[in-house]
Length: 292
Image (tube, rainbow, N blue to C red):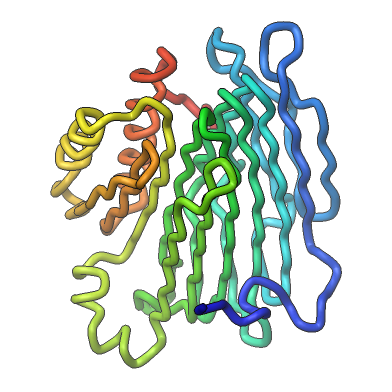
């Protein structure tokens, strides 16, 4: 069986983690509350907010360090208990600067309980020249649980206007439902590699930005998948030349991968997909993250 090398999403020899966040959300007094939290060093969370009257907890992750540098290692663990609901985001884009001597790793594990909801919609991941970033998210979802998570990769600004100057972006999502493997999603970009440079128009279809949305939602039907495809089509084209595709998962869910030339269009698509699921299955209003 094919296996990943041990040092892809960790450093060898092991080192002290740059930031740790542990978050547990449950029900209390008829609404979702943070029942357990621990954070240290370069990760923290701000006070819980409530954006509507559904009782969903809205939590923002903060990195006061301002960016990731070579050798950094981050660990995030999130559990949403039975019937609880969490909307999780970060304060601003994650910026990964040059990592000439070592790479950055972030490992995130989430657990979604029976009839629980986790929506993880972070800002974009910006990779600057010579950056090497590896991230693995493992999610354990109850068969009656709901999960939606997104990610956007953006190439960082360069003084000479160059594009695709980061060394590597390796994002791996592993999702189990009821303990059974459901999704393995690997996205690995090596822009400085010769194969990428010679086939860039084929690999990225001439675009510079890429996004992924993963959704597992009990009760989702073929009709809902058709509506998701229509929604993606409605976002295609435009100034950013957005182009997307939809794949249905074995369980009730879907994966959307999209390419574009601007972050804003991909974020709009991600939140539109989240809003569709929220309205269709939970009667919630559209997301308004209120960051800016």
